[in-house]
Amino acid sequence: MRLPIFPIVASILMSTLPVVAQVILPFVGLRYEAISDPDLETLVYKNLPAGMVSEGGSIVGEVDIPQPLAVSWYRLGDVHYMWFEKILSNVITERPKGLKNHQTILVLDAVQLPGGEFYLLRGCERNGEQDPEIFVIGDTTDPDSEWVTEFKQVWRANRQTEKLEKISPVGIRCENPVWGI
Picture 1 (cartoon, rainbow, N blue to C red):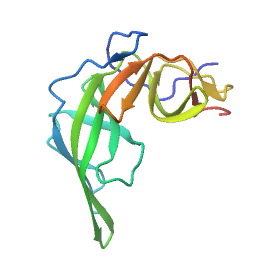
Picture 2 (cartoon, one colour; picture 1 turned 90 degrees about the vertical axis):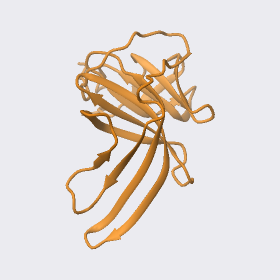
Picture 3 (cartoon, helix red, strand yellow; picture 1 turned 60 degrees about the horizontal axis):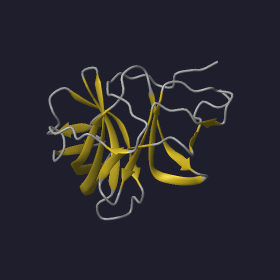
């Protein structure tokens, strides 16, 4: 039996050829702030487009460098995007109830994600080796399989070029988060 992991909706044409992502111009170059404050019950975002909602993200590669890179997912209405970002500054302040974290983030690249229900995975292997730059998009997964090997799209968050690149799924596999459930 195949189960969807966490469905979200978006649209894009798919290709199996490795290509540099089509730039979503309104977002590239955007600087915004993400503020986590123990006095607030949610993250606060400043300077995001009106209606833009964060759906998570992940550091790409090293976290303990001056300006780490990240991939984040956003929704604007029924359209979903993946952004490749640089954390320009990260100020952590100790407060009575915990730590306040204030980040300034620059969007380096952005793509619109595929339509229909899908999930996003990271921490995948390419030809048997862990690759922190690989992010995959799929639609269902089999809880009886330890690995996911079929995807709608595979993306590389290229740290050298600071671009998102659609790549071939050949040799890619990701740990199945619902394996054994």
